[in-house]
Image 1: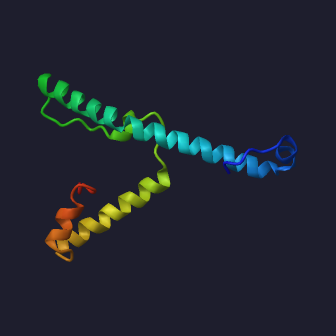
Image 2: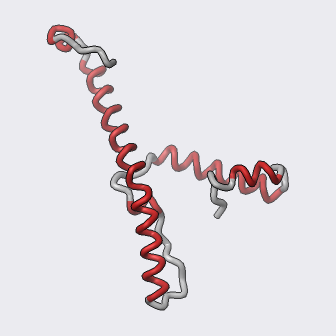
Image 3: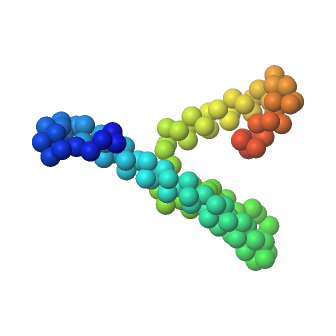
Length: 112
């Protein structure tokens, strides 16, 4: 990639390669848009929690960051992340992971 195609080279490029390139580009654009919107989504959660508290609600708001992102998250990646968190949670509860490792991973994982 990155090299200019001449018109004749482009016309000889198989259609499935062009489709793959366009789909890959689109997926990357969606990923970038979600990354750029994470701070706004977190702020939205804080605002909703604050509004609920001022409204007298005793229950926490049950929203997720993914509810406020412009594109749906990758379901396979989300499932893998969820499974990883479950496994880490079990290992931490069993005491199989040293404390310093748990402290280092704390910012990357949140055990629900």
